[in-house]
Image 1 (tube, rainbow, N blue to C red):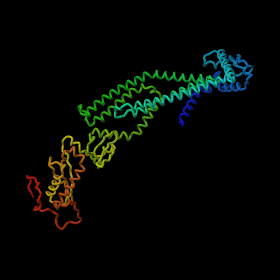
Image 2 (cartoon, rainbow, N blue to C red):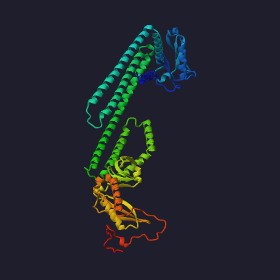
Image 3 (cartoon, one colour):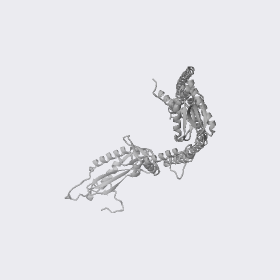
Image 4 (cartoon, rainbow, N blue to C red):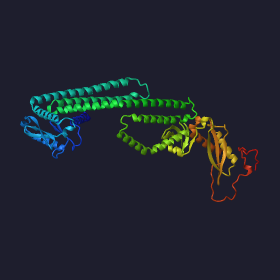
Length: 545
């Protein structure tokens, strides 16, 4: 079953061509109140450019058309003649058929053509005689039969050509598709998957253009087969020739600008390629630039590439054909307004992305903690940063969120060889000797395999609260770069070891609270400062109490 478009599109094209040939057969004229053209039998007979006895040009044309319609066949066999007379002390010519006056010509009617009144009258008389002759020929059976046979032959030829075009397009498309499939892909991008639909669309466009050409030739041949429609065929040919001439003239006039634009874009692409190679080498640390860090090379490359292309487009803009037209300028202004109004959020994210990149707060592969989210950085984009947490969930954070929050980067200093410390806070009541608490925490650190003994782990008493002491133990990761991705598991193991160590020493992990002052002071007497297993960590140069 044929698709509806296969019937609708040729019909629309046919209607367009018929209307075009009608329009092209009309002489170019000003407004209807200033000039008008008399048409009869699809032919231009005369043009009127000034009023006559109060009748404006288009009224004169309507009256002449009405008179011609009143003529019968016998009247049209009468000779067409002209008669000179005076109108308001000016020469004028009356055009009549037999004794019927059809219209009159004034000197103002011939000024636009630049011909004398007598010469214009002779031309108009010949046009009217040809129109009458075309009407008579149109009624002859042999003329009609010949025209019908020519139209049928042209239709058959057009249908055959249209079928050949469609069949040839399918065969050529199938052949090219087989060639593309047989070609071994040399790139991971699989260019043939993109070339195939592109070539298919190109063949469809070429097939439609060929079919439109067939429709045009068929229509011109059919219209030329009948006397009454021959002017329409001639007008269609003039229309097509004028469009081709305008297209050729436009291409010739635009060719210097197009060549200049292509040359500018070629040079711009060469400069952008040089910028890309330079910054790629900086990113790979093949080239050292004192003012560019490898972490920011990719973002700097994008910014400079955008600037290079923007400058190239700005230089090439005046040479683009039609760039000086009001329509082109209006579209440019509209697009600028739309981009300005709709890109406020995007610009905010882009600027935030630049802050993130150039502050070198994080990079791909780093273990970070942002807004309570601890994960590995997978991508630092222009608009957002992508993280992957321990649950293998991808988290997308807008760059503005990174700028507004603290970013804890566990990997940054590890790359430079600096130790990466993990810490755990516990709160223990005042009744537990602090030296014993220190020793318990250090024993838990020693029991954790992934923690290093160099540098030496240590414990700090971060706060003396109203009810408890806050302890924090610090220990460095061993092979921090390799073990950072396992930080949550290491912390879990350390927490478990701390609980075991406190349980082994009989010290409960508790943050006591009370509502009344106890009857006896909750203190640790000096005799219990060093229970079994506790080590004296008091500095030697300070006296003991």
